[in-house]
Image: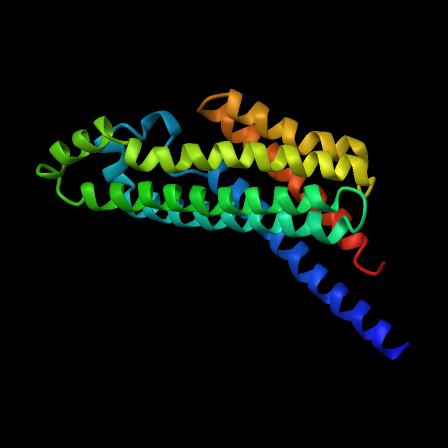
Length: 215
């Protein structure tokens, strides 16, 4: 009996840690994009980036961390919530979202770091900046793979959550659908707002995981 109680306490503690990380990562990622130092459409402007180069570096760092934490913790939350029906799907989805978070973090921070270095010199950096803009696939390609894995991963997690009944079905559907809607929006303010909506669904997932920690 003591062993069972100890196991439950340990699992509840792990669940609490994961839910806090998921909520914190979602809030950080959403706030970072909504409060971005440079409008999305101005990220191709050397002058705009140079004027906010330190803030752009921080934007890349916080965005990468917040997104990675949210993706990794979302997969762990699903695995903690789903113990029977849909458990295999939850594990597959968690692996995919985890990889997506790592790749997206790498690309996000790389952009901020590269922009910081290229905008150090008001004159000499412009040629390199133009070269970077013309060959940005080396960085954005990593993010693109992250986006793809994120869509696949959250589609699998959504399916697992739907089948398990661990959360309301509206949430199981809202998580992948809000992500697809966000990506379809392209870029700009609409994208940033829809990104916040997607992160809100992850925060909701954290809430339901938190509620189930004692079970």
